[in-house]
Image (cartoon, rainbow over all chains, first blue to last red; front, side, top):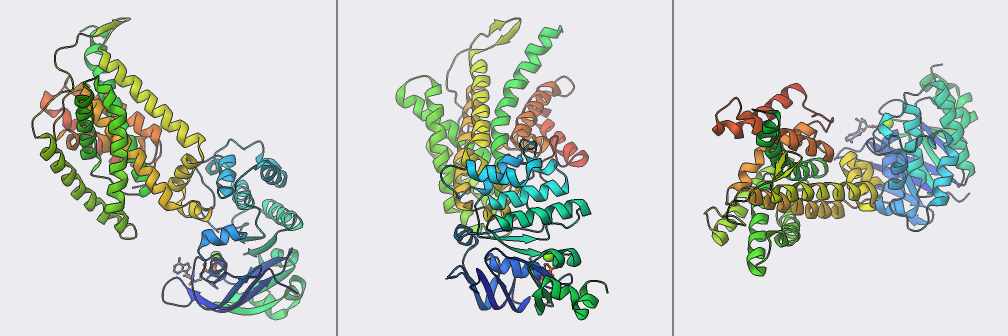
Length: 235
Length: 290
Ligand SMILES: Nc1ncnc2c1ncn2[C@@H]1O[C@H](COP(=O)(O)OP(=O)(O)O)[C@@H](O)[C@H]1O
Ligand SMILES: [Mg+2]
């Protein structure tokens, strides 16, 4: 299997302390990979490492044939990785459409196809294109955040807890859209609090704890694992 | 006093003064919103702009208005230069250092003005201008043109911020800097563009104040308090807020003479600033939290 993204024994942190103590994660083309684990396990940190927002002190991050370890975020963006942070992930005082425009900031040429794609994925937002992102509901704001990231037509999309604080209805909707995005040719790395639902819908999953890999496998296998069930899924 | 006298003696001067404050306050609110610090050299940059316009006018022997675009361009370049020479080195340090540095820059700019143009008051044009009457409202030509100039500047700036790619990038940087960077917006470009615009706005404010009043080396320094009051009253980071705030502060200052001795006019801005910080610190239009 040739992976699109391969983190190999990555160590690093924000300051001097290593938050990640050897994390290895791979994402294949057109694969949805979910990362679960207790609060503070380093899930968000692992995702930021891919995006160049961390001091990586050990290990390697390979993406689509390049060693991107230590690259600056805007170089990684241009290479085809887009990132939706866990919080503050929209421009609140800009309209939905302007959020999408900012997503395409680095793109030149005709953007009609890109707009058609995001409004196709999020049809509810078409009517709200002139609304300020900060005035939308939490679920719709999350869609704006995903849409902004998709405007650059990434090969890999990093989503940090896109369903946090959303109602079950919106959670289902976000998962469905995530699958649609994958089907349009994008690989997805997803951090999730809703471990049970996420593992049920992903292709493969990783369980992180205290900055290191604890378990990995297909979603179904992890759901069936007794230890995983006891530790993270509430029995 | 009849109603029309009230309009002519208090509201008209208040609106003219307020629109000048607004041009300055818009620059202050942009620096606050995008670069996140209080720019204390704002007033003295305005002074310098006013004097550059004076020299330009002398050079061409023409109407002072020739000096406005020239002063705006020079002040834009000066502002970008100041950023590259001073503020840029402090970018990753606590913002209070940049605030203090801008106070130093203010004193330097004022000294340059005093060395080059002297410390005496002067005007663009001598003599008394009689106002014309428009439906009962008395307006001098220079006041009319001031209002038109401010309207042009505000509409032009709004159009730039709403419609152009880099204008949107500036708004994005003000709204959510981390996300703007994640979207590939280059912070350095936005910073430079912001200073160019802010410098030009400073020069415009200084020129218009000189046109309606007089020029002297302290004019900009005295502008600082009403400009900050206007920016904070409107809501930090909000261009429309700064416009509204400027008009309110200008009108309030002109109305204050109805109940207070004239010397206290300048204290009005201070009172407004205190009140808004106490009652509604995010300003009328919900700006950023200071
Ligand atoms: N910006 C930061 N600076 C310093 N430490 C951080 C930062 N963000 C997170 N941490 C620390 O890193 C550890 C892992 O955090 P995080 O990756 O956000 O966990 P998770 O996403 O799994 O809940 C935590 O101990 C947290 O306190
Ligand atoms: Mg997290």
